[in-house]
Image (tube, rainbow, N blue to C red; front, side, top):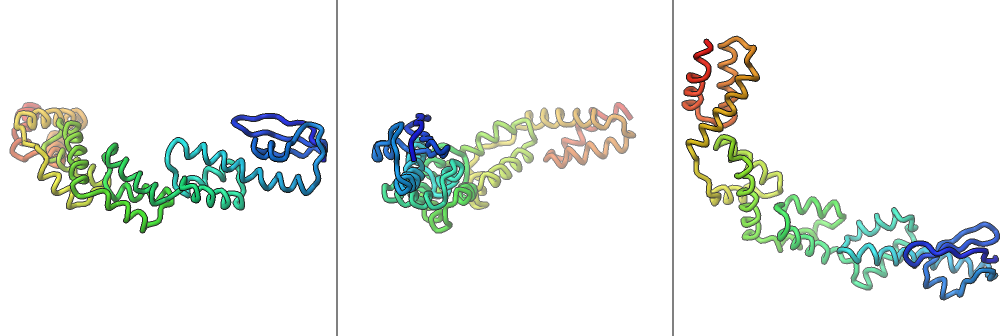
Length: 264
């Protein structure tokens, strides 16, 4: 087989074209090792050797680049190499090499992930566990790494999330705001025990003036929404929906007396 052309690609890869029309993608190391040059003739055995070496070498270069930005799980790395059209046989060899070099280690990955999420995110243990499962981390490794997320850390993270949510829902009724905060913490993956402690520690007092303003705002929206209904039906719907939003019945009645009776 005679080398017809050698073209450099991105990074350190080359495409070697033979006069027979066959092409093979090689790394710079393989190119140098076999001293491939334009016009050079190689045997079928050498071609086969180059082909076998190139898959692993190219895959390793891709893997080194992929892991240089951040830690990767075994599953993430395998999916990445598969996407890059590295064969299963070569992927297995590459993965073994990466493990030997300590560049792939699911235990280290899981622990690093948990530490980072505690520091940067507002998510609880259950949510983080689900994320690690999606990244292919085994349950026993997840449980081991999750010990890093102490109860003290969970309370601190959940309280910050609750305080942020409280500002978001300050225009809601006091009860609706509390309910939304609880639901939000549950969706973020915190346990009921942590949520209960968080709500107990949350510095939230019912502001009667803000509560009334929130009721008026919601009530007026409902009045406009149901303005075409008969008075009695409109009154009942507004009363029911305001109650469902967490407002007190006595306040609701005051609002109805002030805003609706004049339309009767």
